[in-house]
Each structure stands twice: as C-alpha cells, then as structure tokens.
Image (tube, rainbow, N blue to C red; front, side):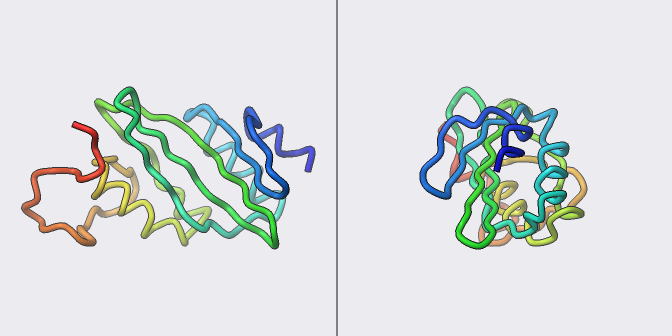
Length: 127
C-alpha cells in the first residue's frame, strides 16, 4: 500500500492499521486518494481537544485494514467542511463533532443529537 504516503506523513503502522498525519488544507485531497483506492467505508470520526488545537481523526476500514487520518484545526475558531458528499456515512459523526466539541461543519445543518438545544457547553472541550 505504497499509495498511503500520498495521504500525508505515515507516523505509525501496526499490522494492518495505518496512522497518517495530514495538513488540514490537504484533507479533501487525501480523501479523494482514499476513494480512488476503493476505500469507501468511514467507520468513525474522533475529535480531541488538546488545549492547543482540535484534532480530528477520520477512521476508514476495508477488509482487515484500518486507515486513520489525523488533521488539526484551530481551537479558537474550529471549523471544517463536511465530507458527506464523498462519504455519506460521516454525517452522524460530523454532527457529534459539532455538538460535543463545538466544531462548525460547513455544509450540514446542525441539529442536536443528545444535548438540549439550550445547552451552553460543549462537553468534550477541555475548558
């Protein structure tokens, strides 16, 4: 799977698990490379507040292989574009990022999944 290096910096491999760091400005390009290589199933999106930035990790799987693509966004104005056009299964995960970490996802309608509409906090922020 030599093409994985096109996604960004492969910083860890563990059997069939690959961990790749990608600059946020290149995330759409990386996702296109995945689709071009028949990786079409997004299994999850993880968001982490590091107190310096918000890390977003996109988890993809095919057969017995998992590809994890990590990118970072500004913590003070956390926003990214939806990837649901390329990966429709991402919608629920993106809504969770918005609700729990306060990430603005451009291109989707924000609706609460768990929290009240009046909730003043983002539970996974480390403030």
